[in-house]
Image (cartoon, rainbow over all chains, first blue to last red; front, side):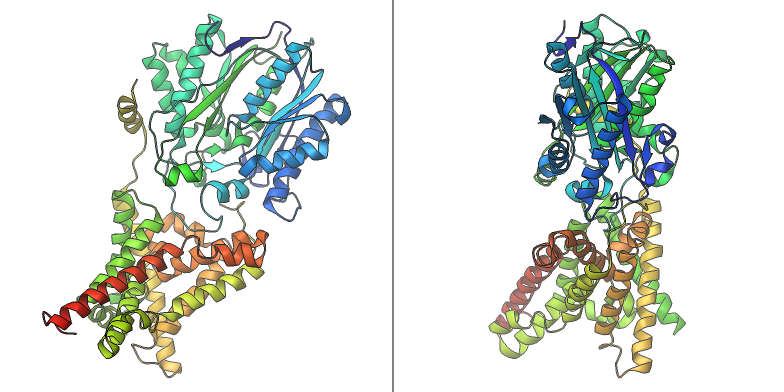
Length: 334
Length: 121
Length: 151
């Protein structure tokens, strides 16, 4: 096995998932597969941060309902978001009352959570584990950029933080459910990109490294997969990743089949610039449309690669570069 | 009257183009750009160049943020002329109080009545 | 691939902002905002006791009031995405920076939130305006005192 590649012989399964989107996400091409679309961006709560937590809570509850499981039956909760100190996740955990590990991999948190859940399941420590991530546009914009109502011109490479939450319920190996067969933990890769309005370029090398390492470690090639989908490289980042993979010696026709959730999320709507981003982007798409595709046997083997830019407003102002990561899970359906 | 409006349009527009060039070519944030323009306005007044521009362009010169730097310097210079060294400090906000006070008052009122609406790009 | 090679690759695949188009949009919107300012100046001169010089202050206040309405109704950020510096450079942009910060930090209360953050974005403009005015006035005073120039 290569560095950071994990194989799960007991085949932990994703038995259910819950995905909630905000009002603007009704425009998403994936919206039909979401379980719930809110009419209010703050989920009828007083503050953006409370709405953020509420949305994540609803996603978790939907996942539990689908599997017909109570909170007390869940052994672990793996959750993360982009707000300072991940308070929405912390409040979510206190409401659910499930033993909780807060994880921060920026927009790659959905998959880092799924990897930890799969490991705990593999170990036998967990019968049921919830893993996922969320982001709420307003609270993330104020955290990383400007006040929501501030008029600043964003370049065409900028991305729109989605309001969405996606949580998956991971259980011991079961028939008739997609299984997490293997995973690759991302390195933190820093190729000295500094533009916070051009995250696609910062994150593409991390996705390239993780995909290359996963394929090498598993002895596979791109054509072994029905679908390889990245998290939120968006319309500018995806072609950069494809170019990087071609330079790594992969076949062009396979590389061009790679899809990106952020690039597709809002369709061709120009108001969203390069496309979607945010922890909720990969979480909502992977745990709705992609899982559905697996369950319906549209795909037999999927590599879901969530990408994350590990910057903070402080490091940006101090002119530091943007290290990025990408975590991948290999999901298969028999 | 029409000529005045046209001049205001052209001069005001050109000052904004200077701002856009600083932002795009210099790859600077709006905060950096506006700070540079304020300093520019203030320095221009040091050479007695901004007031003639106001006489020529009216709102085309008073509305852009450069005018804020100009008013600060203008107030300081006017007091310095009367009272010497001490005037440099005391005169600064003499001319330009309205922009800041209006922004604070309307900021507070805005906070009282509005909520941010991120969901409408 | 090292950082330099990657940057070249990345830039070759990234769209460049069209500077000419951005400048045209900034010119158009900035010009229109200043024209509106001029109309307001005319209004104050015609109906109140203001002269060309003194009408500047009420005009600026009125423009900031308009900026508050545009900001509050979520229109200023849309205008700004189109206009860039065209909406940032006029005093309405200063107003938008102050007002958007105030609205944003309402959730932390009026003292620590609104009061403490109202100049979060616009503060640097005031700071650099004041410091530069101080330096300029000081230098000029010095030059006048030694007789190099006059007021």
